[in-house]
Length: 271
Ligand SMILES: C[S@@+](CC[C@H](N)C(=O)[O-])C[C@H]1O[C@@H](n2cnc3c(N)ncnc32)[C@H](O)[C@@H]1O
Image (tube, rainbow, N blue to C red; front, side):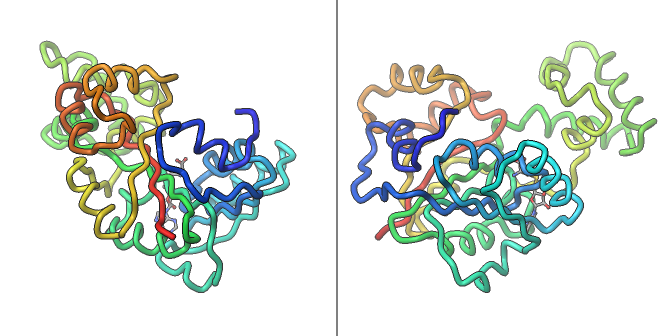
């Protein structure tokens, strides 16, 4: 990305959204569950003059993130160990709060989302990433295969599991996990197929949570240079803002891999 102010980035991703009162000054950003720092580093580079606070529970991940950030000579990220459920003590609100690939690993994703929504300034934004039930169906199917065969998440168990999946014939859904590059490394395969706690969502559930939190859905962000957006627009030309979650649910029903990675979307907090 070329760095741009938050307001310009949001206008570019969502040209049809009503973005009245978007603050044009340098943004304060909270990256919640930053893990090894990827999201924080992208945010620090994507938003011009931003101040990023990145938090995670895991000291090991934070240590790695700090090392990477130093190596890249990025100076606008502060890392801190913190629990998403205890961020009230920060006493601070942000223009943008990001939580991508995080809430669905918490025991109560809604509680996490709700705690984070309280850390957003009025008229501010959230960028959320959640697993899709439909999008993850191949993974769920592979996990059932693993449970049936009793493969363990040890190096030898993972190797035997991979060999069994590669040898399985006539199961296209199972075979499709072998197209994921994570399948081919031990740690990647462990995260992909053996990860413990995971919630998965359908769009009507997400719409209900957005409603309960009093947020406004802005739209999805796809890493595919507009291909999905163009396909959706051709299917539902009447949804000018590309923000009707009922229609997106039908779109996903017709294109079950549309959100195979996860739902990645923005919401706005009311004034
Ligand atoms: C799968 S990683 C995603 C990391 C990063 N967002 C990314 O996409 O690369 C999920 C992270 O959420 C963190 N996490 C889970 N529950 C948390 C909580 N209650 N408070 C803070 N971090 C949490 C975990 O420690 C882990 O680093």
